[in-house]
Each structure stands twice: as structure tokens, then as C-alpha cells.
Length: 244
Image 1 (cartoon, rainbow, N blue to C red):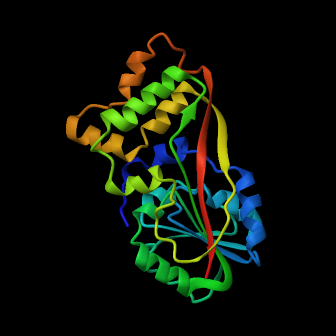
Image 2 (tube, one colour):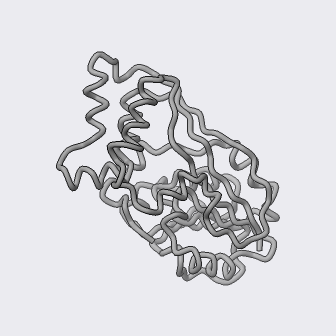
């Protein structure tokens, strides 16, 4: 499992989107009990905080202690620095194992072995992510596409292709449930959008090589634009649901 986000943990926590309540409404009918959930690759807790009200206990893990330090402190959540592929959890312990925007970094075979070991026989594995951001501003969408597919071409880690393919091409050796089509919708300022783009791993790779932030090109293009102006943004949610 790669750790690409420790260096920007605070920005990641501030700028990454929070999953909608509708996502849990779709997952919970497949979960036979709501005693214990493992939120794997939890980062700074974007999904963890959504899970907490619905389960007696939430175990949230990540390989980045800096990321977990940014996560919200909740009474029924226990954070620990552990890899996805090897944990100290007991066998057949979890009603739900969730992975949000992280599975593409995992060793699939080793992680799935850990899922089989720790998931209850009737439990649910939920693989969650989100695709490329869109806005209601054509000019900004054009820039995002230029940044994503042009300027940053060659700077994305190889695993990014799983996101581009909507997680449909990840190995998924489980009995699969049909997943609904869901989206996340937000009203952001242009400044919030810029902060989000700065969390992209390819942006960090570009900066290290060139000592220049490619997102600044957006600022240059929007010199006459109010950075606090509100825009509508949305992300397609990627979802795979399965059981043993």
C-alpha cells in the first residue's frame, strides 16, 4: 500500500469531499448487523465520520499516522496505524468492511485474504470511490480536463487507471450485489476547488519535479474571477458491494 498523502494531511482533511448520507442508506440494507465496522484506508476520516452514528464500534486504519491525526475524535471510533494487508483484528469480527478512495493502492490479493479472515460470514465488503470532478462552469471544466489529461499526463501513479475505469476493472472475487448510481453534489467556492485540486497526488509529483504548482495556471486564467464565488460541483460515486 502506498502512502502519498502524509505530507499534505491537513490540506487533505480540509479539501476532500465528505460522502453523502445517501451512500449509507444504500449500504446498510446489505449489512446484517451493525456492531462493528472496519474502515480501511480511512485517511482523515471522510467516511469514518459517516459510519460512526450507525455502528456500535468503528475501527479505522491507515498507514499514515499524520492522516489519522486529522480525523475527527468520536466516542465509538478507534484509530490505528495498520496496513490494509495485515492487521491485528480477530477473525470473523466485522459486519462491514469499507474502503473509500483507497483500494487502488492496495495489494489486492493480500487485502482480500484479510477481508476473508476478518469479515463475518454474512458481512459486507463495500469498495467506494469517486471519479473526476465536474462543475457547472464550462471554462473551469475545460481547465480541469487540461490539467488532468494534459499537464499531469505521466505524473499520475499507474494505479490511477482503476479510478478512470470506475473501479469496474479491479479484481473483485466476491458475490456481488448490484450497486446504484450515486453522485456527490456540493456548492463550493472557486478557492475550495483550487484547494481540492492541490490534493491530487499527480500535482504533488509535478511540483517535486518542476518546483512549480500546475494549479496556479487556473489562478492565472481566473484573474478576473472572484475566488469566493460559489459554483456547483459534483463527483460520480464509484461503488462495488460484495459478500463472501
